[in-house]
Image (cartoon, rainbow, N blue to C red):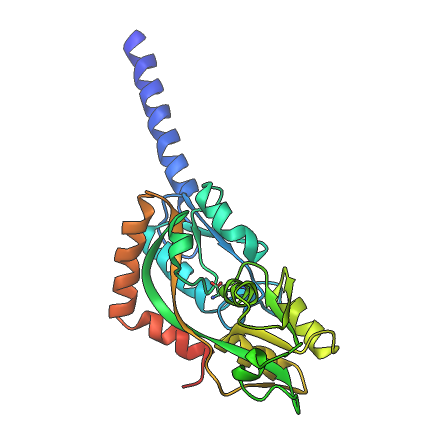
Amino acid sequence: MKMTKRLIAVVLAAILVVAVFVGCSAKGGEETTGEKLVLATSADFPPYESIGDNGEYVGIDIEIAQAIADKLGRELVVENMDFDSIISSVASGKADMGMAGLTVTDERKESVDFSNSYATGVQAIIVPEGSAIKTVDDLYAEGAAYKVGVQLSTTADIYFSGDIEDGATTCTIEEYTSAQEAVSSLVTGKIDAVIIDNEPAKSYVAANEGLTILDTKYTEEEYAIAFAKGSELTAEVNAALDELIADGTVQQIVDKYIAA
Ligand code: ARG
């Protein structure tokens, strides 16, 4: 009698274990461990990340992150926040990784680790059509007094703030928490120019009438994924990313959003 009870207990425990495993496996055939992969981003940066027509997150970074999550067998969870909060959110472990057209800089390397680079960016300048600003040099001309908008804590902010401090330019800077706000201010004439990465510049110019991008390339930079310092994820994600680059997946995603 005693043996039978024990047997029943064992069988019940086994059923429970199986039930838990079945419950954890994701819908859609993709095997996951049920573990989440929390992505910190700032969805104001098309074609890298933005909010789609149905309120879903779309863009190159989102799709690459999803492909990485699939490879790691984790469930991607996108956390949308101000760009300025991404590095601290990753550094503190609130998010597992940060992808936001995020440029690798020595200063950021002091607080986070970066993956291999998966894209390059170029800083561009958006002005209203017919603006007196014709080239980047006009922002650095003697006595120039233009109001230049940037997104807070972006490389554009860091460079241009630095140039003002160094006295390289007499223009002033306006910092906006979102890239969208900076562009809206340009459209309504509150500011004279916006410095932002080239592809988002193209997206915003396409979406707003009366804006144009100056020919001058401001600076070139590398985009990578940020992790907490010493995170074990860095190596795992790098391996997944390398595979996705090697098998053409990353290029396919880029081509979907950026016309050659
Ligand atoms: N590449 C620039 C930087 O790292 C701008 C990135 C802005 N990204 C965004 N999702 N708003 O500072």
